[in-house]
Amino acid sequence: MIRVKSTLAIVTTLVLMACAGSSDTSIDGTPVVEPTAAELRGLAKAAFGAKGAASAQSASPFGGYAKGCLAGGAQLAETGPTWQAMRLSRNRNWGHPELVDMVQKLSRKAAQQPKWNGLYVGDLSQPRGGPMLTGHRSHQIGLDADIWMLPATNLNLTPTQRENISSISTRRSKGAFTNNNWTRAHHEIVKAAAKDKRTARIFIFPGAKVQMCKDEKGDRSWLNKVRPWYGHHYHFHIRLKCPKGARGCVDQAAHPKGDGCADAQKWVTDILNPPPPKPRDPNAPPPKPRRELKLGDLPRSCSAVLASD
Image (cartoon, helix red, strand yellow):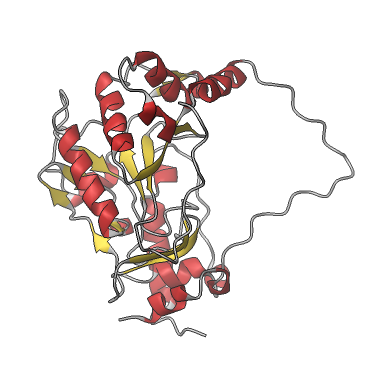
């Protein structure tokens, strides 16, 4: 059994810091319930959330996007020529070096768009990946990144300003359509992210996918990577493929065939005209809450990631 080199008090402090700046609370308003000290004991998120720096190992993702960890993570600089990392108190500006490079490259593309000087970058991963203290189920192996929809016009925000500023929503009618905040620049930035060969998926709300399907007049192959998903209107989510040679990494499932536009339109149709709910058996037991991940649930390599200096 791994002895985690931290105290419960440190972990509890990190929980409070994370909750204060959680994307679920500060961006879309979804309440986050803080775990108690007893609940934290033995949980993987407590062990990984207490680590303030990457492991002294070669860069490698272990496991899957929602059940894994990251060895040898790289830190996205808090501020660069064309980006700023947001919510610095969470310490989630870490990822596999390929992710950090991809985000920096995308930020340079964004800076070429009208009224954009670059990107405001939301959560990547914790220093050693793993389950997060609050928020995301994924982002565990250093290959996921959230990009804010808010145009990055000011790249001189202070740490305090980055804690308090919020992104903007780009949806209306519960995600069936884009609103007036959505611009062609958003389209081009998502397109640039999708056309990067390292990208496996981009998650965004259904109305945005449908709008991009309508607006794209050139090569449409990149639309295949853009998938409608719940939420994702204050930010869009980039997911990279497992890097070459990463034997312990579980890759994203293969793309559905085609550009996915019909699938997105079906989502929109169901939002506007919801199908009747399925009848529920009154005698059926209530659904069990999702069990929190423990260290034993993660790949064995994650124990070495935690134990590394």
